[in-house]
Amino acid sequence: MKAKHQSMQAQRNRVYVLFLAGPVVLFLIAYVYSVGYTVNLSLHSWDGLSPVSKFVGFDNYISLFKSARFENTVINNLKWLVFYLLVPTTLGLSIALLLDGKLKGEGIFKTIIFLPYIITPVAVSAVWRWLYVPDGGLFNTLITLVGFEDLTQNWLGDRGVVNFSVMLAALWCATGFSFLVFYSGLKSIPQEYIEAARIDGASPVSIFWNIVLPQLWPSTILVVGLFGIDAMRIFDIVWSMSGGGPARASEVLATQLYDVGFSTFRMGMASAIGVCQLIMAAVLILPYIMYIARRVEDHGE
Amino acid sequence: MTMHRSVPLLRACRYVAAILISLIFFVPMLVAIVSAFKTPAELTDVLSLPAHLDTQNFTTGWQQVGRGVLNSLMITVPAVILSVFIGSVAAYPLSMMNAARSRFVYFFLLSGMFVPFQIVQIPVFYIMRAVGLYNTIPGLWVVHIAYGIPICTFFMRNFFATVPRSLYEAAQLDGCGPAGYFFKILLPASMTGIAALSIVQSRSVWNDLLFAMTLTNSGNTMPVTAALNGFVTAIQVQYGPLMASSIISVIPMLLVFLLFQKAFVRGLLGGSSK
Image (cartoon, rainbow over all chains, first blue to last red; front, side, top):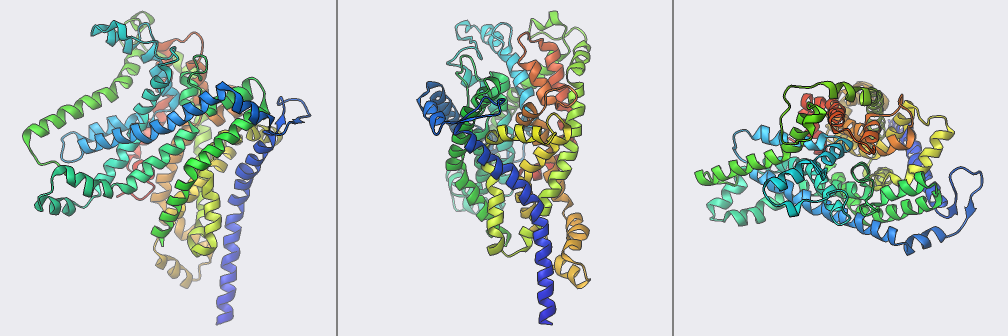
């Protein structure tokens, strides 16, 4: 009986290993090998075409750290991170609080707020570029119409304004996600908690801080985590909206990497940018991934 | 949860605020739709309405991105099916083995979630060229499957953990092996999870621009995002056709959302929403 149990156990383990083998091999090639390739390439100088590349040690990194262009890009990426972690989260939460609770037409409001999240970032760029056209676009037309002609902007052509403009478009689509998560989170808070607190004479403000917000913690983790990952990867909307311009004012690491690698064929330098991006993401995002993994694991068992 | 007491004035304020915010969120979509039906002359006044519904822009738009939409469909459907399947295959043992043994593999696969795809952009380009998958649709399947592993494994591992253990024990008593249990019982029992993940994955595959730009360079493979991007960043932009193209590029995802709204929401919430 014991032997039979053991052989079943062994058979089961064999099947498990077999199941894991394919995905793990694919993962090793896609992630481990590829990241190693990039790290190695970042120590070389290579134009992407010639058969030989030259080992240059940390030269690529040294020139990166000395360049004002790279410094500006890193700052932009950090701006995107702060933006994503604060603005669409708070806005989504506020709208969720506003719409929650017996409002007629809730479904329509919900759909309208959420829809932009489904739209392809490239299409978002297309639409917002049209809204931002300095001469005849919606923004400047409306501003002129209400008599503030001085406030019209060259939204995507002004170095000082461009980051704000791209972020506003990103806000338009990202809010749908945080809104939806918080809205569902609110719906799942047991009504009795609130009622009990109200009977005890708690003010709405204190109910919010002491009951609602702690109950929304799982929703907050989800939103903040995914936005953090998005912010570190940000590429599509910047690339198709401003291309990193004007004069590189809105560049982020991903667009700079693309430009350095695939437009000017400095593959070593581009790889060094990628490695810096990975390290930044590792420091900022990895602890979070470990946290949710552990949380889900505890939850699942 | 209802925090608000039903004070009529407060209710009215909430309505006004809700309507205003929805309007603001709706304006960009409205402008895009209205502009798509305008003639070039009418486009010069953004606040005007088109005299009649001019469909010329949609004809031009379809010429611009129609092929891209078809390519995107051919990329997205198989890529999503395969990546959800591979994710399930990896998630199954991880959900069955005891935590101490599987933890390392699980964390290892999961760590891929934070990796910004840009760091693998250059190697992926050269690997795909070396194996002859550059500028092919199957090449994009492979890339989306590989880079979907962390999220799909995480999601399905999460979902499988909610399937009652008794199901497995019953199957075992009936003489069902571990592989048989996976294919015959676990997968069919997990259809809600699979549907939710599929929709979330469709969104990210459909919307992908980075791999599309890195791995395709001709009209018969380029997905709609890359095709549209070409027109967005063109020097002379024709906004009428561009709005029509944008709308065309969004319609498939919009249909998926409207048809499978519940599964979509469940998927976004990590498969666990009520």
